[in-house]
Each structure stands twice: as structure tokens, then as C-alpha cells.
Image (cartoon, rainbow, N blue to C red):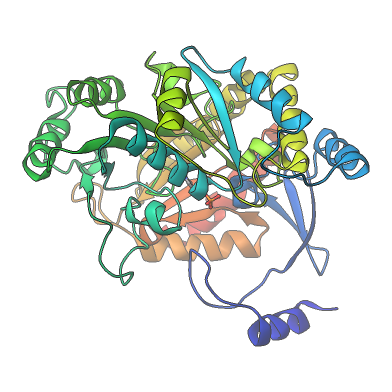
Length: 431
Ligand SMILES: Cc1ncc(COP(=O)(O)O)c(C=O)c1O
């Protein structure tokens, strides 16, 4: 079938609830391998979005395919009241790659349900219900996750869930308190906690944050922010939940993003490429938190929680990450790609900022570097040009941030090719 026929059918039968718009347009994807996806017409695209960031190990990685095939031969799905073998082995393996006291894991399906579970756990553990998240955060689109997603996508969903508050994110390029790091001494945290303390009814449970705000615009907190945030949480008896859906499992050049600061969260959530393309997520916490929450009746499961299929894929993905030293690979690829982005920034005034690290990097477009006037129209034009020329990536902050998440399998030649497409696109807009 041709693309036009597929799109006609999509118009008739498919919901248009996509994150980035409601238009129906091509390409219609049909297959993928490594860092490349192909549409139904056979045209190839460099996938610098790694699918929906879940194919970062490379599309259809042979080790993931083999693990899935084995699971199809043995057990795809199991009774989730009982334990199953791949689930137990996965929990043990995950415990070997997180620092103590993190130890115990619960497996679910998506980033959203892992965050819902983490918040539920924090409520049960602390006895509080107030949950705070930075204003550029994205934690998913189920009810609770949406309510602590302040980067957008929650307008029109009725009253917020009581006890959910926003705090200021450390968006240094556009500092929300008009300050400069490091002289600010984290003024954004000071202001946020003054408001949190003023609003709190005395039932603080947790702060949930990404260590690098991906969907919010590839915003990386300055070093020390997480440490200071955790200190303030501890002072108030709140837990720190780190959502490493996008940043974990080697993507930033370390196994976990929090390693850069040497802190350890109370609860860690993992999803995206955890299953190498198959849906599975995890909530990891300490034995003490698990113990108290269970004593207080914490229950969380779904029909497909801890399915052997997803657990087997996740076991294969951790083995792959460790055995192929993907942390070093992310660091190496990231450095190479950054070199291209820096070069483009030197050449095109339109690029106001280059940021991120490892396999999550982005550029922010501005019409004027002094005034930092956002240039979303330019972003949309560049993305259209790139798509026509075979490069996929996503737009954030309404179009003014281009976010690149290439898979670990991306070669230097593929990055050179992507940079050439971007340069041509920038040329057509700025030129
Ligand atoms: C940081 C983060 N957390 C949670 C989610 C939600 O994950 P899911 O779409 O699997 O529910 C996302 C999705 O992009 C994310 O980027």
C-alpha cells in the first residue's frame, strides 16, 4: 500500500492525540534497523529521536529480538500475583547497577505508571500527600503524572490534584529569577522553597524531577542543583524521586545522571529504552522505604506488571549496556555530535544556546542573541526541511528547541550526514 492510502485510512480510523500536533501527515513508518527507520515507500530516515526515545539501543537490536523470541517460546505473560523467573532475575540485575541503599524494584509498563507508583510510594512512606515538580518537567500523561508535568499538556484537564505544586526549574539560559549562575547561589531553589513552605499544609511527601529536563527543552541543571535540592527535601522530611526515563541507563555517559553529583535519590524511576523497544518500566527504592510502604498497605500492580516478555527484554538490555560499555559509547558519540552543534552555532546567529550531553542534546533558536527572542517558526521550518531530507528529531518549547536523541548505534558518518542536513536547513532559514 502507498503512503497516501495509509494516511487516508489514518484520517478515517486513527485518533489524533499525538504530543506534537493533531495533523495527519507522513512519513508512515514501516521498519527499522540500528539508527535508521524506513517509511512505507522505502525512504530512509536517520532517527535522531530513537523512536519515542525507547529505541536508543538501536531499532530491532538482535540481542533484544533474541530475548523476545526466547520469551515467546517459554512464557509471554504471567499471573502478576505470583513472581516469575525473569522478573526476579531482572530485579537482581538491576540491583547490581544502582548504588546502595537503592535495592528493591517494582516493574510496570510505562514511564507514567512508574511515576504514579513512585508518588504513591512516597505518600505511603511519608504519610504526606504534597508533591512538587519543576516548571519545565515532563513525567507522563496519566492523571497524577500529568498534574506534575508543568512543561505543558495539562490545560483543560479540570482541577489539579490537591497538593501538587510547581517549583522553579534551573533554566539558566532564561533564568526564572533573572540571575546568573554561580553568583545566584541557587536563588531559584530559595524562591521555590519559600513558596513551597508557604503553600504546604504540613503534609509534604516528595519532589519529583528529571535530572535533565528533556521534553521541557533539553535543560540541564547546573552542577550542585540536585545536591542542594536533596538537602532541602531532607530538611523537610520529603523524598526525592528522580525520573530517569530519558537520562538513565548510560544515555548521558554515566549509568545514571545522578552520578555526576554523587547523590542517590530515595526513589528512581526507569523506562524508555529499558526494554530495548518493548514496554517495561521500573521503580527502584530502598529496603526501608519498601518495608514501611508495604506495612502501610501500598499496593500497585497491573494486568501486565512484570510480564516475562518485558522483563526478559530488560535483562537483555542491561546485559548489552554493560557488556558493550555503552556509557563510554554515549560519551564518545555525544562529544562528536556536540562538536557539530558547536560548529553550527559558530556559523549561525540563529542558534542561541547548545546544551545537553551524551545522547540528549539540543539547540535553542533565537531571532536575536542579545534579546533571546524565541524562534519557534524557524524551528518548524528546519524540522520540515530535515524531514524531507531524511532526518528525524523533535521540537520542544513550541518549536524553538531542536532536541536530538540519536541511538547508541549511530556512526560518525551518520552524524556527519545529519549535521549536513541541519546545516542546509539552517542555511535556508537564516540565509
Ligand atoms: C522524563 C519522562 N518521564 C516520563 C515519561 C512518560 O513515559 P510514558 O510515555 O512511557 O508514560 C516521559 C515520556 O516522554 C519522560 O520523558
